[in-house]
Image 1 (cartoon, rainbow, N blue to C red):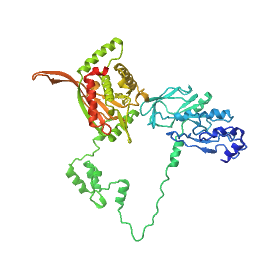
Image 2: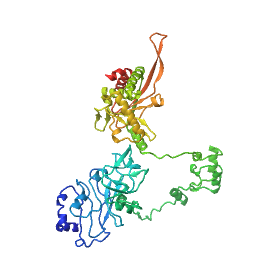
Image 3: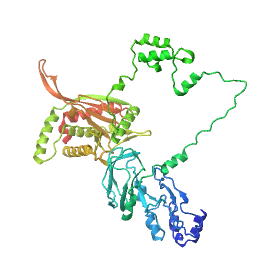
Image 4: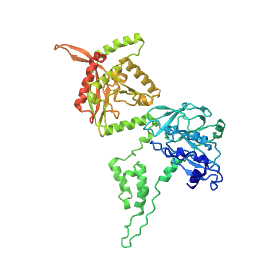
Length: 547
């Protein structure tokens, strides 16, 4: 601080930065001349800036330990809050700059200035960005740029598989991609971990050919420094008047290392008959297993006892790694079943008129070149209109209030090879059947291609899951997709014989069972029944959906 105060007073160039000092807190660019900073040698640590996680608007420290490469020149990058390009500002002031730093790096959590005394030119390390509110780690699907390519702001560097979808990561500053640290298919990369190196000058690319990212970074250093020191050994004086009870060495070592003590004869008898010694409680001295213990075990469980793991050890299996979408689906559904009080309501809906109307509409669609309308499209439209009619079901629970939504956005469950996706059809109650059919087919294809964006699945207020039409499942109960309070499970339609007017009369009709899963904190039983009644009315009288 003594050097800093002298320079703020004596340096004409630093004096020009007074306007910047009045802005948000920042560690400003400093320029040390050889005369004023004579005590600072090459490689001295001038300031250590530890990396933080960029999890809030107040976090923003750049990582790394900056060292004096030359006693005459030393630069410290900004921390946060400056609305501009620090590098450009410093160059305007005539101060040498290591790398370039922009306020965009705070938004994407990607780029930080870096300088070492290892002979590397000025460069920037690009870290794994946080591309969704719940993202803590990600996978690199593929790189769209190669090492040595020129990059410009807005160009896509790579595709990152987040906890919800595959997202394109854009470049924030101009330069050259010098080194790809983690290549295609790299998995479980923590947010902030270095994935690539960029430089400003094309001639510097070759200098990073054999570059390897440091295994221990500022983040690790912060963890190590913040870790509590190992507990000191407590030294207690043993009272002379109360000697410790004698404990056998066998018992002590058994507790310490889980060693099982048995006599040689008992051990051989156990091996001959495949008896697990762990399941036998010894009756010998100090808990030692003796021959009588093995004989008692064989008398109780048979002459040829087998270990519980002998059968499992012969199984043939393959361990499949979890995908990001599988991890998220597992955690959210587990949270739903543990925290949401589910109850279920089931009704049978007659779909004869619905199938007839669908046939007529598809004839018109084919004539006009439009998409065919499926039964699921009609179900989504009926569910949306029922939610508008019974808005209590279009709500979600919070600890302080029940939030009732004015938009009816329907999530549609889509099964893919990568996992379960739920893209959303927004304002489904206000859209026509042809528009709904077109959107669902487009979203389903994007889900299968693993190219859904965050806006394609966020913001839903109700979910529809149909296992009847595609898979022939008769009836099932779905798990609520939090923070929603309801999900409709649609089964397959089947023909049934129903009584006619007279005693000997009957007729056939097709019925489709549907089950509504409700959050009892939000939807009471009578409200759920009212919604199902409205839904059934639209399905059995589908012309009312066109009004």
